[in-house]
Image (cartoon, rainbow, N blue to C red; front, side, top):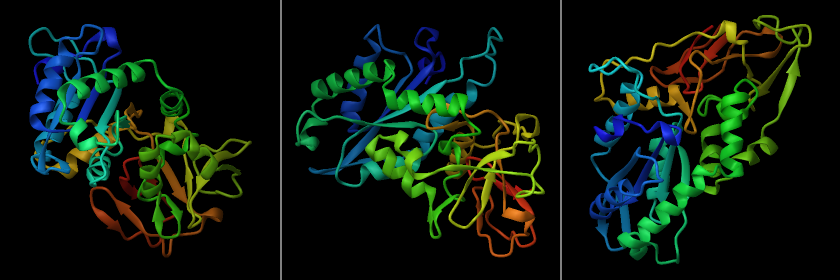
Length: 325
């Protein structure tokens, strides 16, 4: 962990998390990567374990792994005790995972969504199980993949631009649980499809923004004469992004690093697809015409189902933290 706390400024303070390898291969790959001078220093190989010859799963001590990664990023927000110089906060967090047909891919995506940008590692042939146990082939593929990411592919560029420059306008920042793509399907399911396909730009063809006026949303804050652009889910809930001066700042502090749910919520508060989210950004979710909620199901990432009956609008953050507006 010590070497990971000193992220290298030369490489844009990017973090690479490599998952889906056996413990032996993960250790050898990590050691080899550190000796390649033109690669970033912040590369973390997560060990897995093999239950059979054809099934590789992530390790059962997953809590420790997430705790290590979360601790690293949280510590980067503090100052070092030695010289009081701020440690660099990762500006990109990439999850590189080994292609698998045994369910490990989906398991990894569920546990890392949405604070890391997922990249499925290409395999040299169809014998994935044998390939990922070959340290030389794994190292070659990992190095190629990292260098490809460092050059920023069009899809990575799309995500970086959306989160960094168009946070209020992009569908990529919508809360994955409380925005319903269909009446009974949260956006989370579609996000996983995009993650597996690696085509995030396709989301613009599926989710469309429209403009609302003050007459449409009488209780909305910060709406100018030209109205406001917002996404509407299948239930008619309108996710209005208020202007920055109305964002509610959230203190990035944790009292415990031993609760996996708390760590996930905190990481998803700080990052979306590996890109930092500005503190306080949220949506004022409301119904058209200022109608009160009667049967609107909302789920908070911290407190679970919310009784929203009678609410005029709800503050919903990208990590699905919910409270009455």
